Every structure is written in structure tokens, then in C-alpha cells.
Length: 202
Image (cartoon, rainbow, N blue to C red; front, side):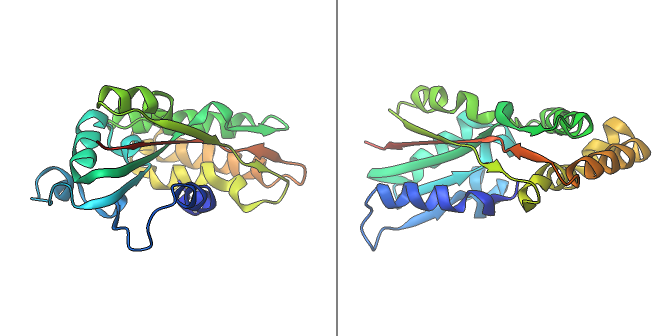
């Protein structure tokens, strides 16, 4: 989901945590599913474990958070970032694009994921025995901004699953309509909300 758009928010949060320069950091998006659930990763190994868009992609939140927490050393920090699509809107209204976003959410849900994983993230961290702090970020996009194209990028990443729902021709037609909407000279928008939640591990 075009993670580069959120790098500034992530770096700002990590800077505010005032970590030591030699802090050991694990980016969980580098782990495969086998690495996460089956490999013998060392417990209490990292000062920071950072996971962005991992719960939404896999949809095994309780299991994933348990593994992430186990990897954090006592006193370290678990940082999790997930989307909430309620703010993902376009002006003027772009019906094909909003439909494409909804279908992408449907496709991800059918595969076990959750495009709105950020909505329950704080509660899930509390269920894991942690006391999270929370920030939220949404980006306002002016006409011509490249990140207006995020729905198309998301659809491309889920093309096989969307084809199962819409058919190849249906997907191609919807994507073409959305691309036309997003290329309009007056098109503006707001991204989905990035929910950032972090907690110290006792």
C-alpha cells in the first residue's frame, strides 16, 4: 500500500521514542510467514520491533502480536502501523474509485486479511497485555499528487483475488474507470488513515 508515503510519519515516531543509537530494530515486514510462525527466532532479542501493514495483510492479529511481543527485549518497544480506510475519499466524488477500494477490501477479507486493521489495533494490543499509545495520520492530496493513485496500486497488488470476484474483464473495466477519475485535473483526495500504536514491553 505504497509504504513510502508513510516513511516520514514512521521516522517521526521512532525519533520521538528517543531510542539509543545502537538500538537493535527488527522490521517485521522482512519476515516471511514461515519465519514468523515456524522459525526459531530468538526471544527478547530486539529493542524495537516495527510492523507496518502486516496485520492487515495476514489477518492473524493475535498470533502475530504474540510473536512480535516475544521478540522484544524487556523495556523495548513494539510499534505497529495499520490502515483505517474511513478517511479514504476523493473530491469531486469518484464512484468507480470508491467501488474499487471497497472491492479491494472485500478481496483482502476473503484471503484472511483486513484493510481496516487499524480500527481495532489499540484494543488488540491491550488484549496482548500492553498499554499502547496511539497516533493517527491521514494525508491530504492536491490535484496531480502521485499518491492519488494508491487505489490502483492496491488493486494491482490484489489483481488475482480481484479477478476471482469481478472477472478479468470486470476488473479491467473498473480499473480503467478509476484511472480516468483519478487523472482528472481537479481531483483531490485524502488517504486512508495510518494508525500508529506503540507500547513498552515489560
